[in-house]
Amino acid sequence: MQLAVRGSNSLPIIRELLQNSSVEIRWWAARSLAEIHDSQVTTLLLQALNDQASEVRQCAALGLRQQPDAGAIPQLINTLSDPDRLLARLAGDALIATGEEAVPALIEVMQNGSQIARLETARALSEIGDTRAIPSLFNALDEDSVVLEHWAGKGLQKMGMGMVFFKP
Image 1 (cartoon, rainbow, N blue to C red):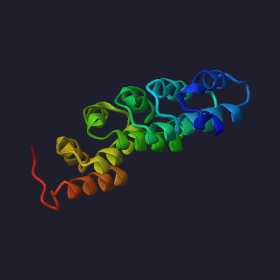
Image 2: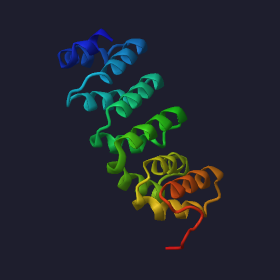
Image 3: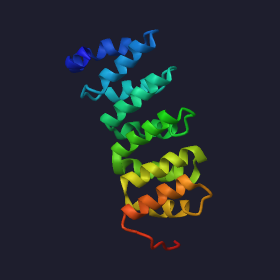
């Protein structure tokens, strides 16, 4: 974490550490990035989001949650389908932190994404609470999934829809 204290000056070193053969070193490099406020951080965290080691990818997603950036939305959206469900959950958290800017991409996943990605997407849309998601969440109520129904209902309630639902 001493690298984080050095701020932007440590970015060249962190860039090298992200290539290290040790998973632990790559993890700490990704962790340090989350504490540095610089325009290059998102690019480096996105690089770490593609690491071979799941723990480094998870750490990168946590960093993107701490430092939300709309530029990370496409890669985070892709991560929602990752077989590592913790990583997918952390990517969802990062998209929630990004907020309203992530909503159009999340709605697209609700309409056309894989079932596994849609579960995390419904949670993200529910937590963001943007009214543009109402039709997608309403449609999710007709799905044969308790998890989708839960998050859709929670999101609709959060947006003031309560138990009154209207067909579009």
